[in-house]
Length: 187
Image (cartoon, rainbow, N blue to C red):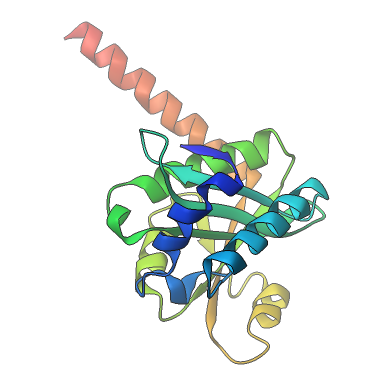
């Protein structure tokens, strides 16, 4: 589902990224394959310096289908950036990738808070964010961050995911699965 970024994935990822349904919403835009290769190399180097965390999202056969990143890592926080190629829209990959990434961030890499800034006109991403039960709209509770991301006009909604909320969600899910399994055994 996720793997560290590799230059060998760039051809496939670049072709997926330039689709008009994807390109406007990608943070690290590239206008040519060479530029995308250069940006990916910079991303790998920035991760080595601890400035960001970046993974390639793969399908069940290990084919690259998008990327998921935590940008601007600082003091246990960062901003999430995710994109998936159009052929993979609506197939559940976004949710699976986020769950795997959040588990890595919160339980292996000691991240405490993940912010998501989503363009108010990006309906697909807003709906995806609202499906995450551990996610909260933070426009009001994090006014400092909300004002920072909208310093050039009200373009973004701000969402926040806390390690504790994510952890509680996972505990509830595990308990729910255990209860369901017990009911099956009794039946």
